[in-house]
Amino acid sequence: AQSVTQLGSHVSVSEGALVLLRCNYSSSVPPYLFWYVQYPNQGLQLLLKYTSAATLVKGINGFEAEFKKSETSFHLTKPSAHMSDAAEYFCAVSHFTGGGNKLTFGTGTQLKVEL
Amino acid sequence: ETGVTQSPTHLIKTRGQQVTLRCSSQSGHNTVSWYQQALGQGPQFIFQYYREEENGRGNFPPRFSGLQFPNYSSELNVNALELDDSALYLCASSPGDKQETQYFGPGTRLLVL
View 1 (cartoon, each protein chain N blue to C red):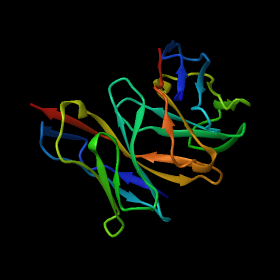
View 2: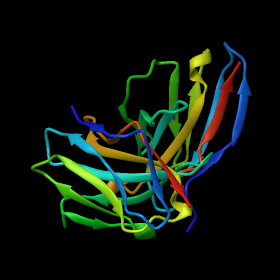
View 3: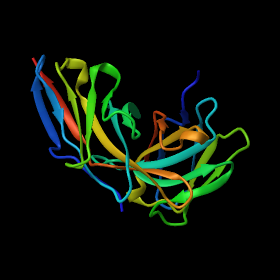
View 4: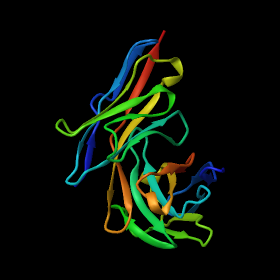
């Protein structure tokens, strides 16, 4: 069965500092991996996805993630945090249910950006 | 290009009632998935519809049911509402050839009293 673990339910960084949000996955087949962002009282916005092409994936808003098979990780990074990055971030793995694709999400990481 | 839309945005029901939530998929997308997100948790997969047929289901009881229409829009119906059904219900659509990539709507916030 596929699963996702996000280490750190809350992460706090200073504006301009590096953002690092951790995600480890478990999958019996080559995974499709995703990062989504959720702002308060909104739905999920796709940040980036890994679908077995380049291992370093660039997304929107300056975020990127690197797929490391040996570490079963897909950590999200951004070189310089901005106040507008404050939100909840979810890592997810996609897999077939015997018909269609479903996303299995981690429990989320709340990112706080301080002045 | 219009994204995924959901209605209503908020809803209050009482225990035992029935509710219908609606979703319009993004233009060109023929697959719709529904997720339940309880407060402080990640979304949980309810089910997926492709070409008007249920195409996968998560660990939700039969009182959670759905429909997909020829225009690919979808409904989620929940019967005999329980207090624990209070959550944000998210609809996501994806193109048939890339079902793994799902684009989410803004959600419907359901409160069961």
